Image (cartoon, rainbow, N blue to C red):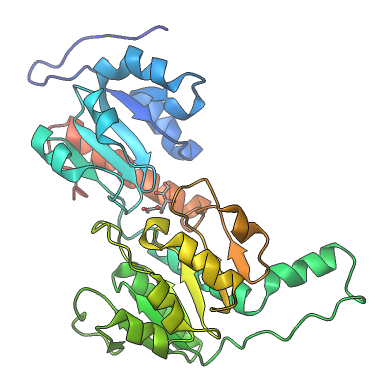
Length: 325
Ligand code: 8YV
């Protein structure tokens, strides 16, 4: 492999142009600027990623990664010149922030621009699951319209919605819920000042009161939030929607609750060990499944890419990146 080692900046200790490691693709618009301004190494395209890391690891000063993918401590240890981990996303749960801080590595995110998409996905999953749109679509696609008597669906407008996590995304979901005449209740670490929705400090109580429970919490704390007890509190007429992180959910308990009819259905964009989806989910008609696509629109991914580029540029110009966590 040819590695371009050109001049070094006088005052800095990284190579110019900086070497950037990309763990997953970015939109063409972002990629064009990256390849113009940096030397880009694409881990996701390489047949032997370990070997690539061995070869280019010593030169890498920036990594671009996704929120769920993050960057393990083990990987960071292979990158002695690393200055910045630029997350194209908002979750920092897959990056060892303490270790990054110890080494003086900036960790940045792309807040704000993906809020609406994630809230839209939460609503898409909610409507699709309650209205059985996946199952009904299969009926049409398989030419079974006349032969099939689908059960009646669950009405969406007017339900009681429980939101777990009232950050930007939780609030964007709540705003959408208002247009559907829903009663919004929420649980988060603390009540959010200025919100008109009722705060419920006990998540089991929230699940009991809600027709649909949406998980929109950050996974930075790493704790399990959706347990067997929460699912039982949600009950046989309740639905669960997850657009946050799979690791916040006891996935075995969720699968069991769905299979045994202890909750009515689920809409899942995220899983505990992506891209692995436990096989049991695939057979269930009362579940809507997505491959972690909540922020995956062209417009939003371009906007996320612009912020990633800003963060990188600031870092390599000796400034504090604007969206450093
Ligand atoms: C992205 C995410 O799908 O923001 C996050 O933390 O998980 C998602 O928005 C992911 O970052 C892919 O780039």
